[in-house]
Amino acid sequence: MTRMRKIAAALLASSAALLAIPPTASATSVPQGTQNTQATYGAHATQGTLVRESFDRLPLGPVTAGRGWTTDTANGSLTVEPSATGHGRELRLHTEGNGRAFLVLTDLAPAGNSFWARLRLRVDRFPTAPDWAHWTIAEASGSDTPTLVRPLGGQYVPTSRANFWGVGSDLGPTGDWTAWKTTAPATAGTWSCVEFHLDATDNRVTVYQDGVERSDLTVSTKDHGGTADDFVFPRFDKLKLGWQLYQANPTPSSYDVRMDDVALSTRRVGGCAS
Image 1 (cartoon, one colour):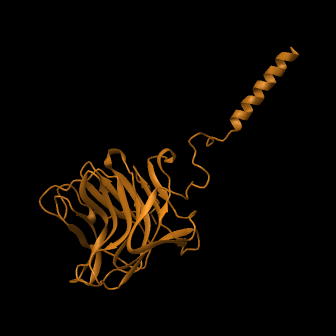
Image 2 (image 1 turned 90 degrees about the horizontal axis):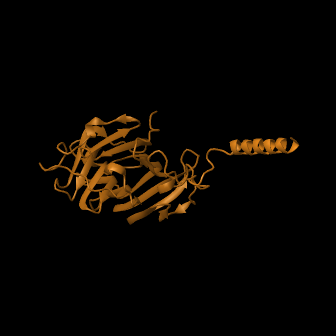
Image 3 (image 1 turned 180 degrees about the vertical axis):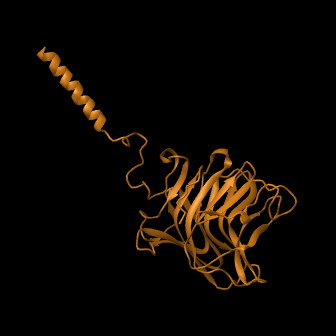
């Protein structure tokens, strides 16, 4: 009887120990230092998450690569700096003239060739010359076709003396176009939370600003800013986020973009509502 009691007590102790193990202690848990701070990829992705990057654990100073991303620059640079809010860090992208500076996310393979993106963004200045100066902030592409999809970008419109947001594309059957809208003015020097959804079921690009859908910026297979041909997505495997201005000798002669809280997912990330 005494031996049976000892066995029972041992079993109870083992059960209590098992119950005390936290539910996050598993073989697929995110390594220390990557949770909500570094880019998250592959087996560490949760609830459809493809990428997360807040820049908070990266060292201050110039940066040429991060976990799961590289950079693409010409007359430009990327620098991790203290956040303007005093909390954490942010990415500063700087270009001279019509240079470019991009954070490049590679080896993407979103289910259904569709994904959501969210980032916090501030453009210090937009161009005021030359006329029709064209700029890009986000560009998605694939290796199967040269088509470039630009869900975030815009243009300086001299007749309005202002810059306007517009979804665009290039190198595909619909040609080179930016469907800017005067209902979507681009405001410099202020932070905004922007989202876009690339939905392959109708080759649809939907843009959101501070949690609100901008239906005026939506483009799709038949409704876009190019030729009469269908607008069709490539098989996405790359996304570039940053700044490129295509015309030479612009005014101003240099540009700074600040970026934070980047996330890509197969479902809407959220977090932009004010």
